[in-house]
Length: 112
Image (cartoon, rainbow, N blue to C red; front, top):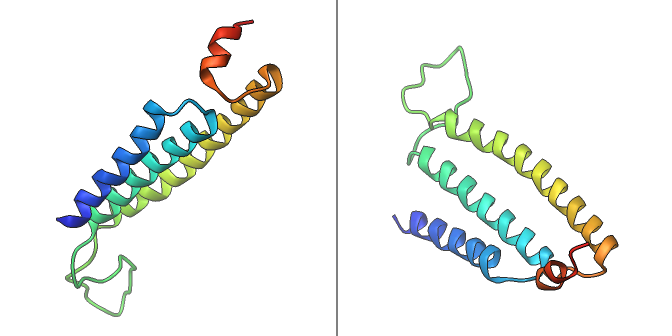
């Protein structure tokens, strides 16, 4: 139960960075922290104590196995998260080239 609470704390830290910080790089880091908190929650949700990994072995009969669906979802989520992070970093670099700052309050005032 404590691990679920720690996932919530990690998500709250990322959400705080997204909502309260004014630097684009810190906002991107907050988004990444939120993504990893959700990935960790999914892995913990599918984990079962003292069970085997979900690897097929035709010679053995496996009765206790960890749920493989959350693991597959997390692998997909990591790939999608990497692509969105690369896109957001690319947009942040273009904004810096145009406005010369990462501060979103200054960028809002420039509008051009």
